[in-house]
Amino acid sequence: MKRWLANLIPVVVALLLLLGGWAWLRSYTRHNEVMRVPDLAGASFAEAEALLAKRDLYAVVIDSVYTEAAPKGSVVDQDPDAGHEVKPGRKVYLVLNANQPKMIDMPKLVDLSKRQALSVLEILGLKVKELQYRPDPCIDCVVAQLYKGQPIEPESRIRRGEAITLVLGSGEKGERVPVPDLVGLTSADVQLVLNMASLNLGVVVECQGCNTVADSSFARVRRQSPQAANNRIALGSTIDIWLTADTAGLRPASDWNEPGRYANPDSLYEQSE
Image (cartoon, rainbow, N blue to C red; front, side):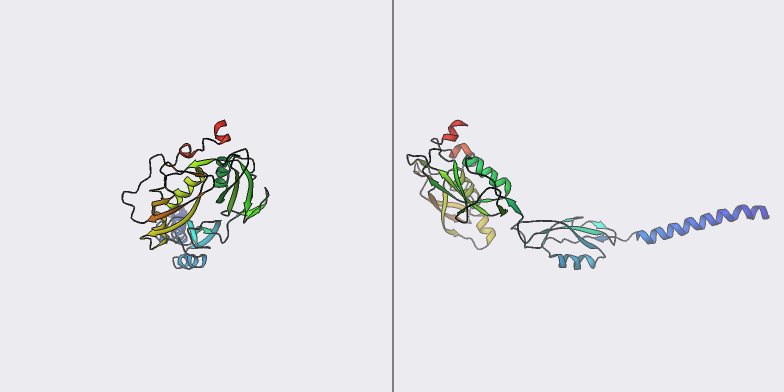
């Protein structure tokens, strides 16, 4: 009997330890307890912290970006995503919209072709404010780069998203370029085409039916001046546009965004490419 008890006691102790460990583990991991991650997009960090705290979750900022499409300091991304079920006490990692764009080095654009300069600016997140022209043998070559009307040297610090004026060569004979057909394009598309065509946007005369910012973004050109019908104008000239939110039937040509459609045939760098 004593021998039997001596063999049984270790087994019972082992079972009790296993049961105790299993119970502790369930309690420690909060088995069957889950929280649904809320959608934090657009919330400030303080608001995100408060929302997460109500669910026994914690906010941790891991990065920041800059976009004009969201309020400054607001959440633009999160991990885990909204709707995911997680254990209480989980950290939710946030990316916030910075109050200011990041500083970058101004590139050297002088002596580049217009096409090359536009590509560099787009890659770096800089905008084109205006294309100015002055006599120079190299047509559509960058002869100066300006920021707020003043020359800006390469490697100068500048915020991403700022607008640069490109001063380009116009040739020595007063070259003229065809007026592009802008009808059916959105405002963003218009700027792209005018850059390719070596022209500038003049005045947005009106936007019919545009009651919100979204209406203006999706509105399309219904009229332009000067018109595209076989007209030619000087490099750097402006085109005025009229927009409408009623886009039915307003569609541009299928190849509207092909650079070759707007190439200046007299451009020296275009001929050499």
